[in-house]
Image 1 (spheres, rainbow, N blue to C red):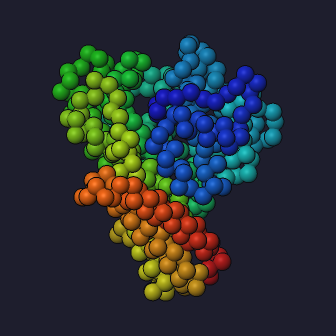
Image 2: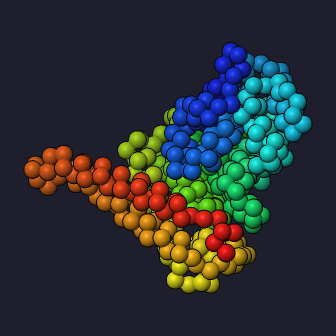
Image 3: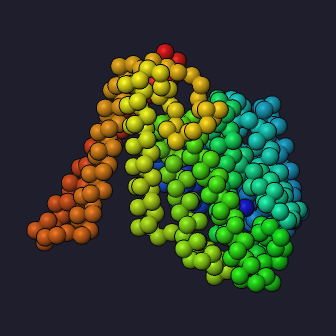
Length: 389
């Protein structure tokens, strides 16, 4: 039960290319499309493929005209996961997206099976009576995606897993709060204790939505504490996705949790502001973390500053290198350029004098170009830990 969209399966079943997967995410989710643009290209194409497969599995249930068709599609998806491991021909064309990720061991097939189980819970009418039921459903529907995403980003530390699950669960809870009416019209309810949403009192629905958003907020906090396990460029992308989704919940709360009037949508202007703010926050954290790793040999360069529980912290401590010094310098310049871009845009939108005309816009473009350049230069010196040791 995630954002509705359509899969990208043509009449000949020819899919699986990065461009096809990109079209799916661009059409189905503005939030994830924006966030994924910050990922390194190699990881980005894998994330697009995983998203496209997850979307297809979701659509097999949401868009099926008959329950039997949906059940057969899920069974085919599940059987194709085994075929991905053995190299046998696949039956469902959308399985081509996930085949290379499973065949090369980049994701755990068990998590893919658990996601399919989540879609089966939808199909069989899983009843959410308690918060524990809600948590279980959200794990299958999205926590599993968090685990697979973390694996695609190259994270091996199992301590990161609970943070990945927390982010997936938080996003799914936000989805549920946003889509109450849409789900009710499909005959579904994910509000604990409210089986028939269309017959429930609006006040009761609003209270339930507020409680779900409060649960989501606690999990967003857990997710943020685990961002330090990710490579720094991936950390930026995930922070943007997190804050954009978090803003949907905040907008729902600003509207008094009145969700029975339709889906809450964030304006493009607000979306741009939240994305920029998240980007600045992530860049600042990366800059400070790398700076600390350069000035203090006892600090791990990938440790998240917000972590307070030592059991959640990466446990390898590495000496700083000349590459790290160059990385932090270019990262700082990139952050400064991003801030300059935002400031020049503000000047352009609210000019103090008419003489400014398009000059601030030109400066903003130049600053943005400089930010990209410095970011690329910084990435050149972002070496794996084994190379830094």
